Length: 99
Image 1 (cartoon, rainbow, N blue to C red):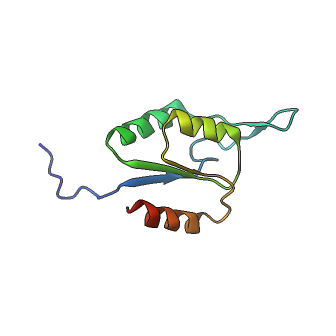
Image 2 (cartoon, rainbow, N blue to C red; image 1 turned 30 degrees about the vertical axis):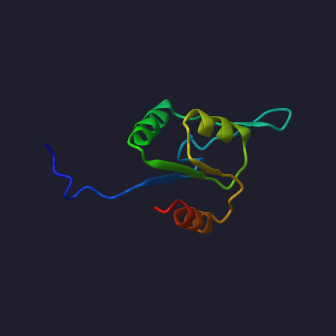
Image 3 (cartoon, helix red, strand yellow; image 1 turned 90 degrees about the vertical axis):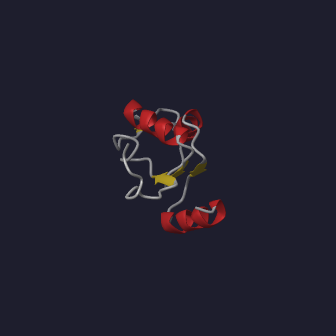
């Protein structure tokens, strides 16, 4: 059995969206709505992370309904959109969540 002695004590996975959970492209439809292309492998690993009882957060500078839908399907704990300054959002999240 592997030792947990050197295992990091990470409790929160905080991610951006564009270029991190997507290929970086944004599809703008004729009505102004946007689409993003997410990779299923990222979703699978996020689900594995969640099954371990660990928290997840998305902090992104843009706002898009596709992000809300994806976050809901992956049971992301916290979603912050239109967060142009991500560090203060992350610091507040850490303080509020107790991680």
